[in-house]
Length: 311
Image (cartoon, rainbow, N blue to C red; front, side, top):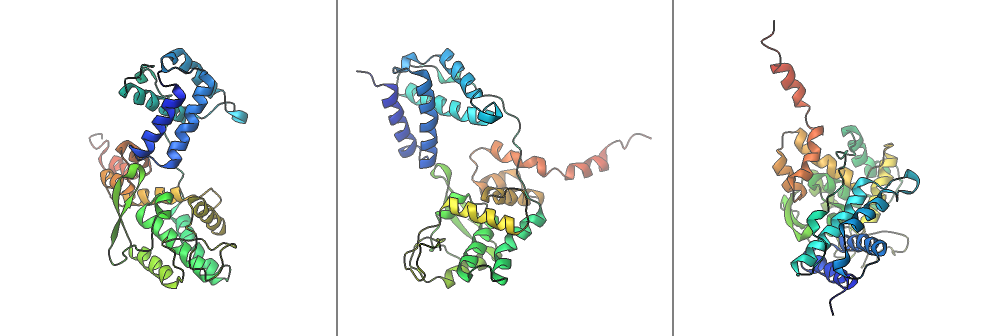
């Protein structure tokens, strides 16, 4: 008996996690998007998936926006990307179904970057030190948070990558390797400020946890030898709180510090390919989103060279 769509979906998700090295979060997202399609389509056999069915699914997604009245185009595309990948998976295994090439993504507007100014970034970076000086927090959590912020800005790490780091990081070197999205390894670099901040934090620690960054919540006893690894959600909350303390009114996340890392490099003359490698982007098109904020020199070019032959 031929495998059902539900069984094939399970095989596909296992393939994503084991063979493609996708993160658990990515696999969970694909599962959710595909389940939404299967619940809508109400078909069991792969051969019964049709182009008309997908078009009707897209209409349903477009109208599933709640208060806003329409689902964001990017979110709609996430569903279609998952479905297209699933169809490609079946085709490679000679399972007859809809041709994945028949699925086109919705056109989206250019992505806008959430950025903070250099002044706001400076205030954010100093916020843990200010809180410590004013007696607003204990020394160890403050040293940890200083190290986190310095490491973010020095390396451009994703929050999940930062949380995966262990105490065995070699601070005698200016660089270390990190395993990022898709299990791809890249090299990131440590500034002197980052090395000093991480070193100061590690020296102050007395626990035996292997994680570089650990939690000091109410449930974690003082002097405990085995503290829990800090989670991405905890780091996001921490960054948000320091942004509030620094008087920054817009929403600030670890990813915005990653944006600041990239734009700082580009504004100071780094080439796009190098920034792509430092960020760990598989495709340079992803990195190109930063170029529109680094084109200030074009005004000088225009003034210097435009209209010189006119009298």
